[in-house]
Image (cartoon, rainbow, N blue to C red):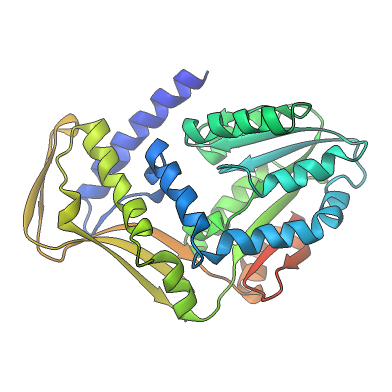
Length: 323
């Protein structure tokens, strides 16, 4: 099953790269930054002092884990904890540990597009929590959720942490939440992490560190194209650039061609020409406030049951249920 899914993902990578680089303006999806090297670089990003998101959410979960788990297990003796974009599971382990203290029967179903991330996560969980049932699934979020989330009678808790929802524009976020809602029974929940609006400089610093770690992360998508699709991108001829609009709460990442250049991607039979200062848009990181989250959730046919925040209100976690 994993091999079949991986082949499908590779085909999707090729198709989306071709479409994105032949569109105007050019763009690539941030989900394809993640491979073995991208996962490694992101681990470094999460350790950066300027990248506040991970620590803020971790502290929030650590301080409120008992209350959160009590809500997860309310009126249910069996739950399926499904995580979209599981990564290394650092924050989720707090909830798994707390769940292990109770009498509720549960299993953990991490979903990630990166098989490498899933392998590392399953390995660490088998060592730290050998009694927890782990059922990983490699693939895209919605398709994987439809496959594994509609089996059994367990109460589903869908985790979407790390402000991954911020990779979607508001209209896309509503559609995504609507898709999640379609997989939910009345008692199911979504546990959603959302980075909050704050000092614009704090946000820019999180995505544009002087050490160049985020630059290496952003450029990894070009490295993947070179390795997997026989491209000849010269990474040194592209500049990482981050912008943030405090009015809309949208941070955007770009790769900017610093000189005129031609690039070929042999596996796609594609020849590309870049003008000097031409961009490839690679990622958005949306920031929120309560008013915005309420509006998005309401349009999706959901409502906020509870919210938790860190001491500075930098980051919030919302428990969402069906209306």
